[in-house]
Length: 363
Image 1 (tube, one colour):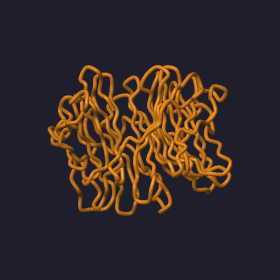
Image 2 (cartoon, rainbow, N blue to C red; image 1 turned 120 degrees about the vertical axis):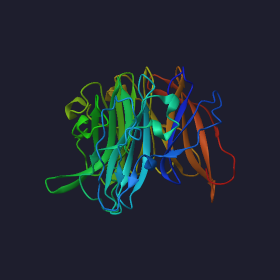
Image 3 (cartoon, rainbow, N blue to C red; image 1 turned 60 degrees about the vertical axis):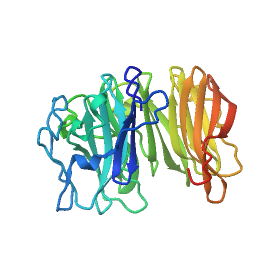
Image 4 (cartoon, rainbow, N blue to C red; image 1 turned 45 degrees about the vertical axis):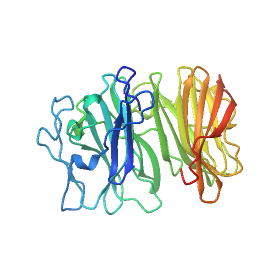
């Protein structure tokens, strides 16, 4: 994520050897030099007791960080701190969310922030994390409960989207939930009660979340008629109310194969949705406001002879977009491929396709 054209910085969060980690680069235009990563776990200490024991912290607008103010967060003993995401506000402040999973597999979502992107490469500039969502249920091995909380900042409101489980009519359902904070985000009470953005059909998982053109856009996979399909919905205001989200649209509609791992790109003119079906990567475009009639047909962006997996999409110019994915051309060798696309209204066509990594190992 970029923290703005003035500062010329890129921010990166990732799962590293020490769990959820952060680094930044101001080495424009190549961004080859990155700060020494720090792990979000170092913003707290591990307790000797099982369970979530996060200690509340002060106002998010305070000038001092959690570390500087002497506030401490205790992580559950034996927990893993993983799957971070990051967002940038209009003042180039950074906001991060990540999952904290205890030894039973039960997870919570934590939030932290840094007021100035210029100093955020130093762990002491980040506020003490606060638990904002506690998982509704203990997961079973096949469930993705709070797998990856996704954070977006829109009009300086902070939103976190996540998957979790709920029980309806004695039936266990995995759903996609949203919580929001307007101010005082470093206090759990500053966050809204999570709301399910769409009625789950059974197993709603692997959400993707972007903010663009003043709108929140979400995509996820859900279980329909014995297989997964990819769904899309959007919201323009008061998004912690389910009725303000559009009716979820099945954008993949594969008759036989599982459609999974959705990704989204947003431009001033429309939205690009990508997914994979275990064989190929598909994209489908729409023009705003992305009602069902505004979508074009699905386009096969990979069309390789081997399985194409885990797509990401981006816009890079007016009417131009791209999709990258992982592919294996021979056993034991995986590479990253890219297709550059022309997007004219809802119609997508291929401009050029090629391999972006050539190391002969596993990318």
